[in-house]
Image 1 (cartoon, protein in one colour):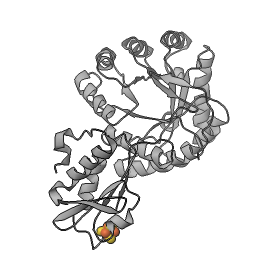
Image 2 (image 1 turned 90 degrees about the horizontal axis):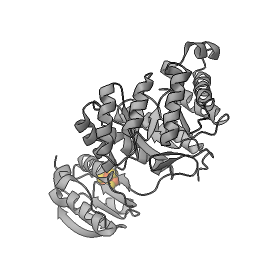
Image 3 (image 1 turned 180 degrees about the vertical axis):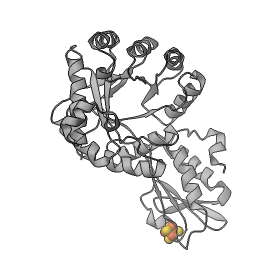
Image 4 (image 1 turned 180 degrees about the horizontal axis):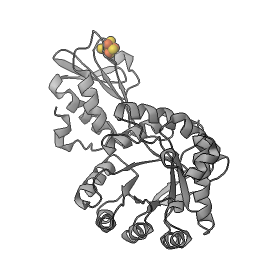
Length: 365
Ligand code: SF4
């Protein structure tokens, strides 16, 4: 059982972050924010995967204008990601942002910080300080003697002090490096110094394959140590994949419940159907299922049901027909072309949940 680090609690819209609140899963859009229709559509897709917080870059005045329209049309709380320009932060707050990601040391002086802090206080909007090892201040780097974890913590503390000097404590903080051990060392060191909640992630982690592994390792270590209150898995892929990966990491650590636990066999000479393709298709559909259900996708009838006795439901492939089984017992036989549909129908019947798979489109090749 993981013991979480006690922290202050902040709220991003309706989502509590910190201490005993569930570790939340977030992602970031990669559409042009100025294109509100495309951004709304991407956020709605993220919502369908239960993404709990979405970050959107606000890089121009037009993007801030577009943010208004975006926020009006989505349910999930939106964090505006701002670099340097405090006017964009103010415009984003006006547009209804539920959180800001902005580094107060980079926005051009105390007066501008005061304006942003005052608007955040008025609207009860927290600020995330986002320290990235790739963009550390020169003075901090010089002082660190090349210790990036130490440098990230120093930088974070400097930004925190600027906000605390304005009596602002509605803060969360991230220290991201693309190196797992540097990231872990940074958060561990910072945890000894502050009680603000942590947004954790490994930055520029890579593609769905390498990035999910790197994030699983890095976030896994941190979360196991009780560090981390909201997570973003950063992937060079569809942002929905970040959400799927995030929930998998949390579920494997017992930090979130609900959703599908998928077992699938590695295939072998006994495999009789295209398990790889079936498992991939089902994995994407299963990411939208909220009920707690164990599903097995196995390549042969001889060993499949027995090897996955604990599954609530599973399929075991045959040459032309495959079987559907539950807790190791066969409960039906279907043509291979219908087996995935049969699996989904069975999950719907045992959970009572209506599964969203685009009216069958997601089952096609
Ligand atoms: S379930 Fe069957 S096909 Fe899959 S690995 Fe085991 S023996 Fe091979």
